[in-house]
Length: 200
Image (cartoon, rainbow, N blue to C red; front, side):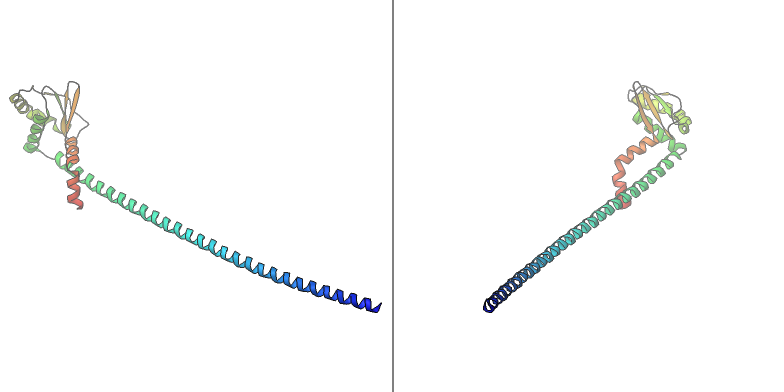
């Protein structure tokens, strides 16, 4: 009987040893798998962090590029606005100077403008500042028109909307021969050249 118990103890001890060995083997495998999973997770985390960093850098670079482009456009817009202001001031000064003309110089200008612009037969409506001047030169204007076979002009009511010069009112049309219109036309023709002279 003692021999049977002894055998049973040995068998049990061997089973326990086998189980411990198997458990140790499983534990080692689990530990190796855990280390592998941990290493893989670390690599994936590093890859995700690197990708996020690259995206952040790209977004940062793009934001800087957009800001620089916007700044350049704004600077160009400001420069154009400044140039426009200088040109406006230059042509405003030219209009002021034109309106300040007096005497023979102004009379000669009005005569020249009327003779060049009239088709003949229109009503001439002078600016308030040129009412007396146009009355004085109208006879000469009509003489020039007659030389070219064109009908005489008649003096009409004052055109309060213009600073200098006149408007010609014909049948179905009106021609703006004011100093303002003359300068607008000159500006359209000369603005590029004036800007080049002023700003290089």
